[in-house]
Image (cartoon, helix red, strand yellow):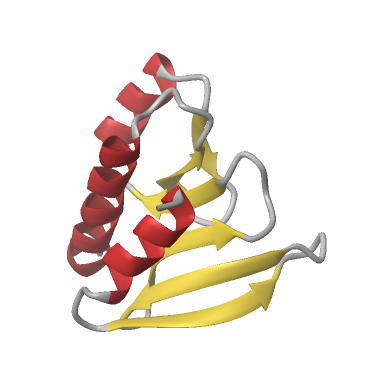
Length: 110
């Protein structure tokens, strides 16, 4: 199964998730997943490698950014999130773990 499909299947089975398709300021199509009213995950469609944005604890965010060049501060979520280029530096399972973390953060963040 393709990583994007695994991510979507995983997040759609979590409670209180809704999805909207939006366009960003550069007219790129985004699949935005909300937990309640908070963004939990953004998937940039038609990217190779896949690009996603996730909510992330600030300290974990800094650690991941220092360790992986494919992890950077989120354009949509700022310091409350990360953008990951799914190029293989992080395994698919690690990315799914980050999706779970993002889901949890989207409920606890003030």
